[in-house]
Image 1 (cartoon, rainbow, N blue to C red):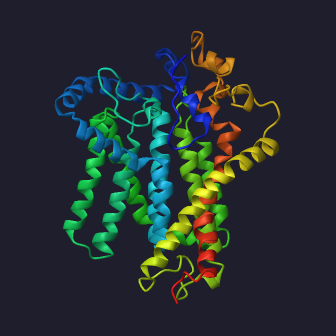
Image 2 (image 1 turned 45 degrees about the horizontal axis):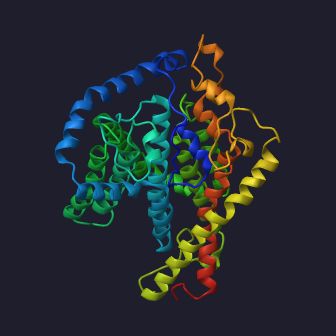
Image 3 (image 1 turned 180 degrees about the horizontal axis):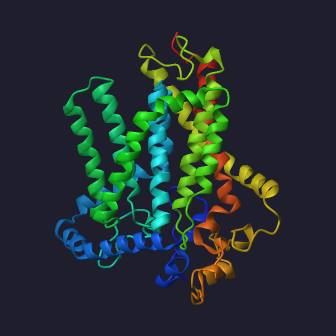
Length: 420
């Protein structure tokens, strides 16, 4: 029995299905398109070529101090950090900038996850590389591109633009920000979780994403605030999630994409609702949570505590009822055998793979006579995406945006925590 790990991003046991990897090499050639397989092989071969260099670098520079430092910097890219840190941007009245930055951060998870599932290239192998992390389940995800690198580069590019061209910040301040970001990126290689080509892919995707948001987000934000704005965002989310590539392995990257993009749906809906509640506005600004520097430090801290408590309470309290509702109203009592139902959970709360899942992943010998013999539902990520637990993540994570932009501002108003 393979060892089971609990992902630190989410306590949902369906993540545990990620331990049932990896499909044998000939399976990819049988079911992936020629183009997809060529790209995949090119990345896999590059990672293999880099292995001796990566191992030598790690052996030369590794130390207990650096282990702890880079483990901590790696935690700046998990769900808990995003869920707890991003709301503060909005609580302090960041408005369009905060929404744009939140979209950049969370959609970088989608774009890097999309590429990971499409290319399906593994991380550097251990041994000889030591994979240093507090979340061993991360080592079971695909490697190319590096999600941490994607979001770091996208985020810093976006912030740098505002620093230099909107706020008049010094170039030194921007360089300090980039130094911190590159420290996080280097840590992904040091920890043995990514190769140089993984990081290079993350840099390219992150930079392209940031440029697109810098250019087009102001117009997109205005579109979201229009009368049909939430419908536009829902349509974008539907298209994005429907077109996540199906990968043979049970890689949980697609689950991260569901969680991250669903938060942006809630953010768009919450902002739309806030803009239609004039009693919450400050100085006639409809799309930013009321705050200015005249508010005392105590009131500002109390607002942060309330906002954080709402997010955590919603995340923890909504999971069971929302998941149960999705099971009851959207899924048949007997789900597809390739989907994870409650009966597929073992006594310890972990996912017990169905016979179909085992067969599709080669647990009993991976045999694929032809591409036509493999249906989409036998792909590993399809089993994760088609599960009720995963569909339930959409309203659960969307609710975070509602908590931040509607419930929290109403409480601030009622408790006298808004500027006069």
